Length: 124
Image 1 (cartoon, rainbow, N blue to C red):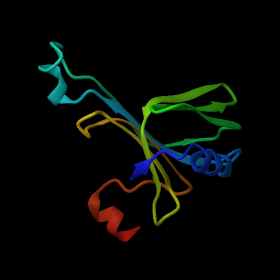
Image 2: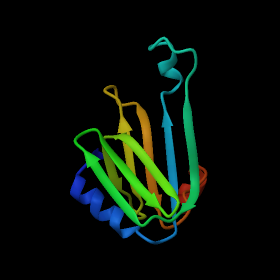
Image 3: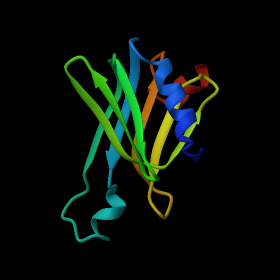
């Protein structure tokens, strides 16, 4: 992954407008963070291969960034994004890493379902 290039990400987001796409979205403070910040528990949200369609997509901010995807009846929103890549399958992979390189948030879009395991990834 490389640091986010807003123009490159915005251009890729526009390619997904008004089409059925697969979404991977997760956010976590991770089990590693619970003791560090005096929290009683680690928290996480996760969805993989949610099929969505959005008619507006925007990246905003200045490291970290936020991305909003406007659907007919609501929004998908991810904040704290720092890095991106377009992989060999054309999928847009966005991630937010903390100062120590640990994942805090991920937003990924694909025209085909994401693999559910390493074996699936090798076959894709």
